[in-house]
Image (tube, rainbow, N blue to C red; front, side):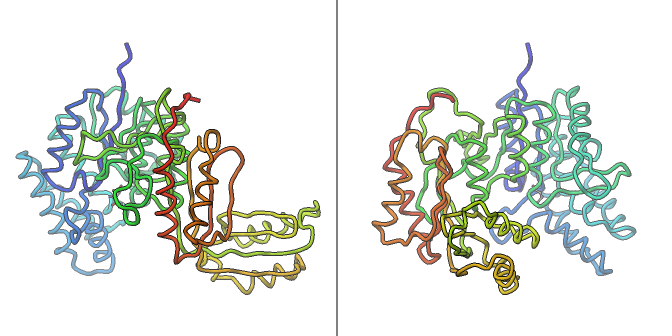
Length: 449
Ligand code: ASP
């Protein structure tokens, strides 16, 4: 019989001190399927605290500019000293810190220095758990230009991890063929977790953090929003793109390609089942047609009018070409009978506003160009909504009832992924109003399709 494999990744707050590491040890031991553990570097223990990665980056900045970094390195040392003493283990911390100090003096390297947080945490945790320590410098493969080599990583990780019964893998970094360390973007331990889950073709990728899953709305705006039990990869991507951040987007992408379910869990409340992200809902699970609502401020809407733009003469294509030539990303573009509407982030538009309009006038000879700033864009997401309810209609009716101006609406066919532009100063009111409507819609059972 094949053993199930769970890859469990623990983020910065989950490994912030000895008390947290004891908690994650009992989480790991409570399920024998949790065989492959990925850890971040210790994060903040309290709001004014510093993340170990930030302290390490300070060490590098100082070393690199010839300044003394001993105060910062001492803080790193003390964080790990507290952990080791708290766990009552015998770990050669002085030697490790000495090795780091030597490289900072002789050949300071940014990524190598930043990676030492994960490296030390994984080594300590492996010792504490009695698991094998896996240094990703051996199996997370980067090209020399610092780009991840996914194909080689999958092969090498699989070959390194499969023979092991239990392992702790340091998150956030890997190495190129010359052994030079490269890190992912900040928050990149999620990516390591996802790579390990994909390489092992794991049954589940658990991502342990300090919240019990994804909320249906921003808790900074809505009081005590519901936690969503299940959502699809697509819904997660939409909600994250629009501002809800729990998981690194690259981590979601690779897990979704392999269809590995992701479970977001809370280290401080392991009894909560968190949010599970899957391709299709399990059969019979009841789910609110509106999965969640999120959004972003700082948008501008550009309106270009010309009689019969959609007559096949390529007006819209030319407009998109202009944006492409300038590498100017846009949120979305709507084509009507006599107009095109493009929503662009205001800060991007500001960098080229006059030039862009000039070029549009020259190339497209429009009847009118107008721009409206101070817009926010709200995404209402729910893959099953339009199949089974009038959720979209109710959302729009509620906004109207609240006197919130609807500036743009964009909805693709079939699925509810409604993007609504509203004035920035009504953003919070709109989120609260939509959440209220969500709560009045009863959950529907899934057919598993
Ligand atoms: N330690 C790194 C950071 O602070 C990576 C991570 O935590 O995922 O960004």
